[in-house]
Image 1 (cartoon, rainbow, N blue to C red):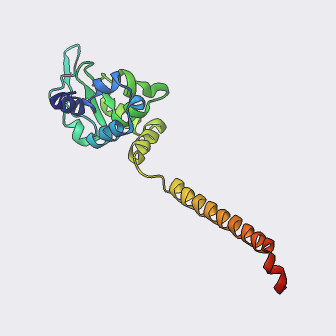
Image 2 (cartoon, rainbow, N blue to C red):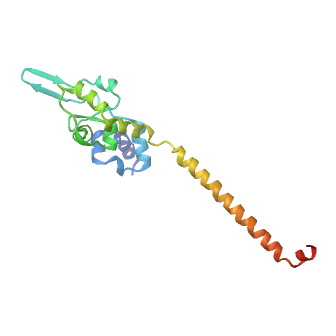
Length: 174
């Protein structure tokens, strides 16, 4: 793969449309860590609008500064939750993770409701902890290595006296 093509792929890794096509769970660990490092894509040229009678509404990109987890799909012209997009949503939260949110009239209240939902909170924690070394596993692994070393030493110590007792001159001095 050419260097320019690799760079384009990396630049697109955190975009909603790419993540909808290439599910986060199917990416390699290196790619997942790169998506996390890049964070949510905040397209400045997003054109989400809504007309209801005489009222015209348009998405204001300042929402991205207010809600860091918020991201958008240019193709779908819809809003998404970055942690929920990566780790999945459940129940009514599928809107923020799969289909996208488009109702600008109720955006503020739906954002408030979503960010207090259990699935969003769980996914935000998963994203925050993703890539960290699990200390409990590391301690458990080191502890296990210590036990294995101790058991090896005990076995070695048990076999040594047996060999000494089999030595013929040992009995002459006892």
